[in-house]
Length: 82
Image (cartoon, rainbow, N blue to C red; front, side, top):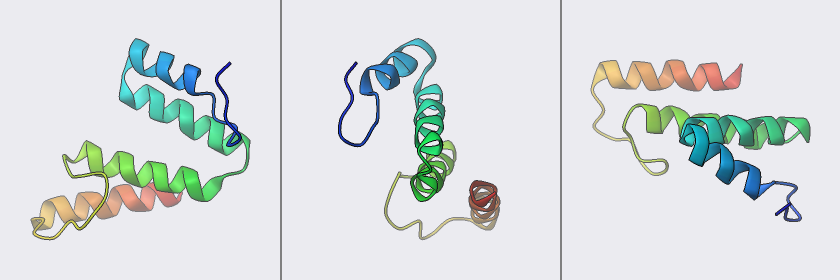
């Protein structure tokens, strides 16, 4: 098991990504974080997933989004809060 002090099993994440793709890897990571009560990290991960799903960069400014894309990002951000 390739686990660091953070408690993340990187082998398991790599297997999830190789077998089912990046979305499955993110879900596996979210489950791992939630199991350890790392709710802020789960929220941050879900925000990154929302940005990537919309074709946006994972980090940085999102200036210049059209209204529809901005609304969708806002909806996905609220869903991450829940």
